Length: 407
Image (cartoon, rainbow, N blue to C red; front, side, top):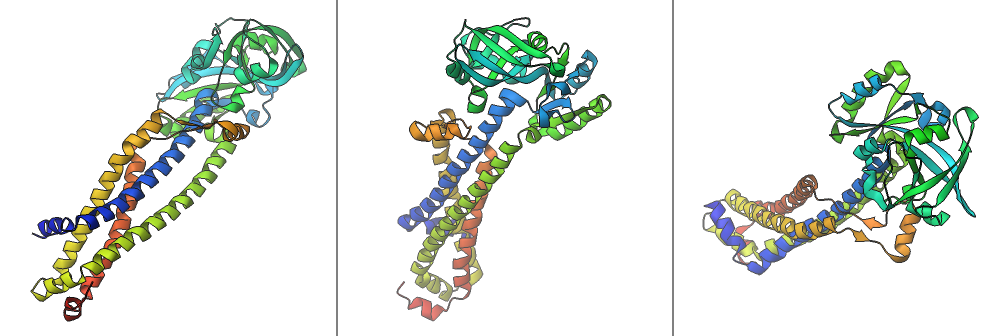
């Protein structure tokens, strides 16, 4: 009976019901849109660097990541690779030799990151071939190179031209050579797109005089959520080889710190939004309660228990909250879904400014159930807190005064 009474009550005044439900809908819609944008942007930043470069875990010589010195490279055995590959969560073990050299073409020159790869294994980790825009991909024993598009633009070099690389190899040996450009890669990360040069691993080892040596083994995981457990298993395998396993969070410290800082500021803004929304919902509830004081007084006077009347108002608010939350989710799904499939491109000066800070000039959105549930629960909590007001008014109600009330 109380449930039926509450349902009929909320539709006696359709305007009041729609106003309350709309305030809840607006709160949830803004919260979902803002949070989706934040989470989507963070996830894309991580994906751009982890999936396109570092991998989730790297096996390296102790101290290599701090100095990135080719003299801290190591010889890798098939036995070690097989043991790491046998871990269930490891989907790919990719050997790399990384160092730096001066890349030049005609009158242009720029310091670049040189990465020696096994093309077939690298494809399992970074899917490097999908970033190829011009030319052909490397083969295992290719003597050519792939060059990132921004670097190619700076050097004014194209597919078929010959690039000159000059640097220092293993144990100070001079490294110099000419390499034909096989293809142009275009990375979503401006940092990667402005400095990367890829060559086959044997060719890179020969160039740096580091035969059979690598600077890292980059690992891809089937389930990134099991990263800590997987790292423990790898540590047990490599402990006797004077090697360390570094998760991406330790390699990309600046990115992790930026995400934490930006996420904290985003949560503060979200809290301010919820505070504004809470006042809006509470104001609507106060207006609704004031309009019904005379009604409450009459119902208590003719014999309805105050606790039953309080339960009815609580059920009314719960129904309005559910209606607003459900409507907010339904309205937000196509909006967020559209931007999830079609990220927003920053153009003009804004896009250039974002690129200068080393980020892709796009706004990405996330579409995942957990933040829908989280934001819906927060809005539901706001509605429940607002529902306390009419319940308190009912328990403090003076029947005679309420009946003679004009509001």
